[in-house]
Length: 291
Image (cartoon, rainbow, N blue to C red; front, side, top):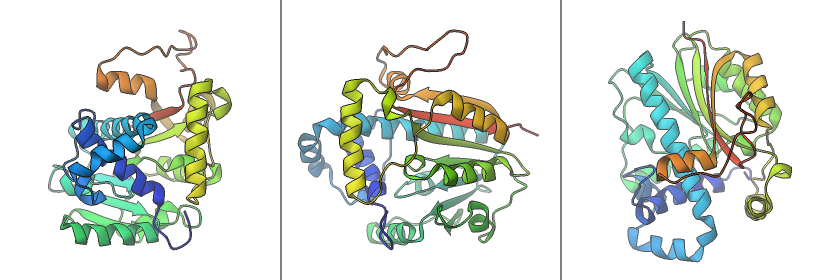
């Protein structure tokens, strides 16, 4: 992102979530605040969809990754009693403003200071109130440590914590990603995280590669280029070395087929390894051991 400007890709993601509420009636991910926070009206959405038909795929993926993350969080709250949640690179995410978490839960929104200030202005303009359970933590992932930013606003590292980190990893350097994952894995109380990432473009089929290159050009022009890609087996090994003992990695094709009820043609590379072939985007859940 450009210095002192809010993230343009954060706004684009919010727009995709808003359009999904109208074009697919929120079938994958229901968000009653999506249109409001994006400053859109339902009647505007038809034009948005007709003018950009090639973006339907990324819209559905963005909806699916949010649905996956929030479902994983709900299971964790119910089964493990987690009461501390961190939204990394929150952008215009609305979870904190519509959640039905227990009253003793705390939600931390972490984002670049410029993007966070922009969001808070939009919330005020939209009439969306911030709940008492929400705490804002301004952090620049490339120049500040995550834990320093969180600790400054009252984060408790001894509590098991759930992190949602969507739409951020591809735009960071691998060093910044490693530092963030290492910080999450190091928490004394234990942690769980959901994030999305992409396979290397060199592994894409031609049709997917063309779509990716077009999107890469758009985000680069906006000053937020893609910086990092991961080979799934290598990423899984990295996570295990950091201390994550449970990993669930879902290819975009599989995730969409799950939510849309459609068969997928994506197969696994070998029955023995269980490692997925290239599918472009992935959504991954990882957890450290539960004490």
